[in-house]
Image (cartoon, rainbow, N blue to C red; front, side, top):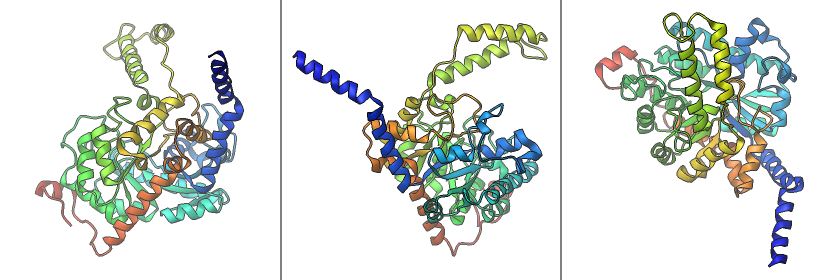
Length: 429
């Protein structure tokens, strides 16, 4: 028995050594040489616009953005280190803006993505199709795709949607943080019970165009309506598993099973509120405490006394430190989605440069994707399954959406206004 225990201890020691860890790193690198790692959502363009203003057109994006204050999660050097083969760049604009202003800013964001690619042709190339992504990856560059992160950004116009498609947009997120005239958001009061008839027409037009239907940010009723209507597989570009963290932005097990039947993919988000239920609850407590201390113009223990309120908040934080959020917890979401929906229906959608300065330990920027792949290997995943997670699944979904669009080539574009369609009560063409 002592010898047996000694042998077990020796094995444990070997497994814990850097050499053992290097095996997983080597395997992950091998996977990423053959399969492009495709992240479903990165807010780098919007963050460049917000922080840099006019300098966004000329700032050096190659390296060093991690040394700026506040630091960026993304630059070309770290994308290369992370083995990124394809990226959906989010062209997000504020959902509270008037509709026409959202359209204008979306066009500017799309143009910024085009300009970034044009400035760095040895590193980036625009992609529209699954074959484009594979070809660009094989050439040693990063396939750049575009995602429009909010149905409000089309200003209830199917013509605007088609214009975005013609400019290279690959998906539309049906809502962002606010419920809009034709779809309910996960983080706002519902008004429609899901999609209106116009909302259903938007899904149909996305299918016809070959654009992906993105269900991150939408209410569960909107998820179910879109899954009922769509002819093509859907994506959740940056969401987690609600069974792991009960945030309404995440996906319930019931909907995960519908996603599996649809052939879609849920791309796991790294934002702490969507990863850790403990962090989500702590974050809500922190917000409540801030309101309790100072909520001008009428409320708060130290209303109108920001210095006292700030000191009291620091005292609260010292007594109530934030829970840790880790790479392993992100891997728990990946594992749960794979367990419920199947390994063919999970991907990666980090939300880098869109969630502030707090990220899971071990997943601090775009250089760290291989660590997540290695963690899944450590949990027993095969190289083939990890390749599906990295990019194989979303490539399959893209190809399926392209086939649906080809099959709808004879279908006329959707016409009509939101007001007209919703007054009649049925989507029209």
